[in-house]
Image 1 (cartoon, helix red, strand yellow):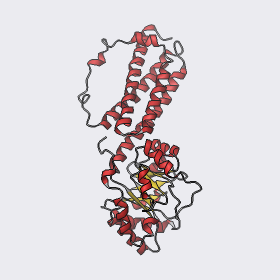
Image 2 (tube, rainbow, N blue to C red):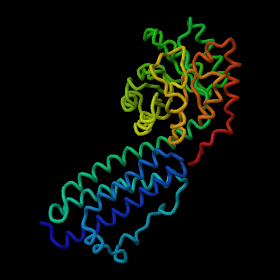
Image 3 (cartoon, rainbow, N blue to C red):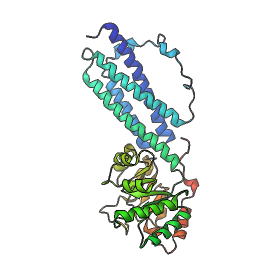
Image 4 (cartoon, one colour):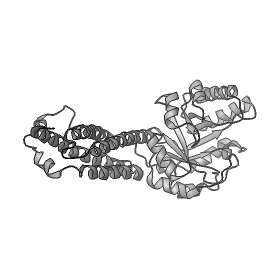
Length: 363
């Protein structure tokens, strides 16, 4: 049985860390709300903060308050050299994120010392589960903030297949890279693996040193061999975690999403960007349902991770994409089937002047 003095010390520790964790969650929540303008992540942090408060309410409140002794806390006199400087809102949020993680672990451990005299074992278990969720959210805000900086000026994403011949493929890839498209994704289900790798190596050579990022569809193994900048996966392909296990942490991972729930999950999974659609019917891929502009509006309303509208987008319907709040698009045959791909790219780029992108480079 825990002695009175040990229980008093445990309550003092729990009280201090309860305040620390709730305060830290509010700091991070405000970063997601006011710096990232991300309704999804702000909602997640707010919900977690309320859940933690509910768990802590199961503790004996009078004992916690009685144990509090701020004037007698020796820790208030201990200072770190960098404690009063932060270089950005993101650094403030990440520092608070770490503080929350550590505080929750302290609560979880010291609650165990007062079980079962004054509380139940479920409190420690509940705090543990909240701590795991905090880890996931911390990854999400860090990757969202990084992607907003890295992909801030990326607006036009073009999907290309292997072409009628290696020569035709190379010619088109050079035209698009020289035209300044932001992404080129190699997507071709018809090619054998050796042909796909061969095309990928050509695309890597063409895009190397340019502002065009080279992405491989579905195949992290091909991306690794061809030294691509990343991989794009669908809902039925490898998970983000599995792709990163193959490619490591420094390559881009994009995820196709067809509902707001899938878009939210992609953020929590740690995607670097998402594709949202299909917006309109497309001649290159068949779908049973079209979430359309409704999905774009929902994503624009609550998710700040870079998102590309995709599916049947043309110069004729582009204004509808803009009206839905999107500033990034992914296209295929709109460009590749054009008589003049360079001119089509120029027209698409003109529809999204850089000034319309409001993502801050220093959140």
